[in-house]
Image 1 (cartoon, one colour):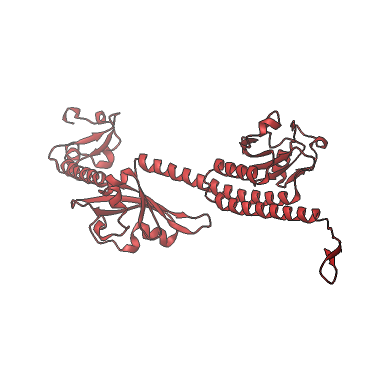
Image 2 (cartoon, helix red, strand yellow):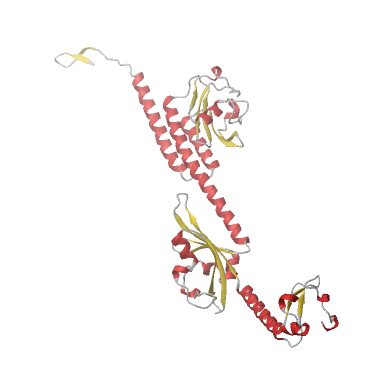
Length: 381
């Protein structure tokens, strides 16, 4: 600043100097933290779109490498009781001799973090007993990802992992664990659905799955044959669609409350071998035997039902014909004018008709169980 005469000419000056090094350092630190926090926020949004463990690992590793700028960053997932590297920064091989896959029961820092479920920070690797050769790295942090694995970072400086970074890494690890839990559930669900699809396609019986409203959700290939419809036509109907024209085996209308689906949903229990008829699109009637059980959510809520149906039309017709044949045989046996006896393989009498008993002069009780040769007049038998 200049001091001036009354006329305005400068006569002397002075200056004030202030050391703002720490202020600028604080400003840089604040900006750095704001940038890291913003990057973490963006990354957590992106992680939600990841559908596999590998996608999660690669996104986490990329974020840590780009935002935190540690020479070592990587994700290890549990596989067969080992913490196997899944996504590792490209520069890692230049810093350490070998990427380990330690046992979950081992004494590495990675193993300890996984077992304890707590973040482990090593300020100086040289002071830590470990099975791993850390190479040029001097310090690091190991952040558990729930039951799935560990996120790790390392630096070539002693005590080189910033406390603020550790807090952000913990947040990232917690969010990643949530995403991995969801991914695991989705994977399990996909596997179960794939298994169900294979069962439905290969099952020798007709299987149908209904939602709580009684709408077909899935149907097996065999269901097309039993119900007389294509699969897409089946799933367009409900369990009590009038087009089924459901009746009792005797042809009487079957009340809705007595249909298998309605009974399962009303009682919450299974039904077995309920017989009723349906009408195929070509007008033919088919007799079905239906069994089913409720489908429940993990919380026990009723989510629908699954049924298997057998077309027993031909079986019942065969049984009817057999009964008719037996009736005709019985009539012929009992009313025949000649003597007839049924004997077992040992020649002992099982049953006789009236003409046979009249011929020998014995009643039915006397003849039953006797050998046919034990009576006189064998030539007449």
